[in-house]
Length: 130
Image (cartoon, rainbow, N blue to C red; front, side):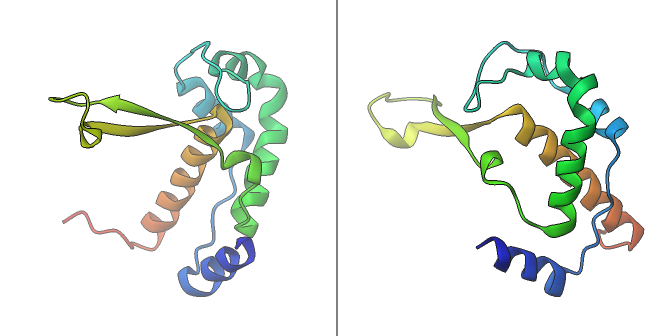
């Protein structure tokens, strides 16, 4: 599956992702809400923010490898899914909305990837503002 994604990204999309810097990773980590809640990997956002000066460079290296190869690490694929009640009858399952909670590393990587794609789209004028 990972190899198919890599082939698809390189052959069909032909997106050259811009590599990110540890400074960009630090900025994204700073924007996360400081919460003590632990998710799938037992690391809270608050702990990630505290340890950011020590781990942003190695984590950035991992993110850049992921962006350049198109292979997403298995540990970043996990999320915790909760159901959120919307309205009306609580016994009807269609009145609940699934919410996915990503671990903090996945959220940072997602924002780095979004930034990289937007830079690429803007550089080649792929997205229209109309």
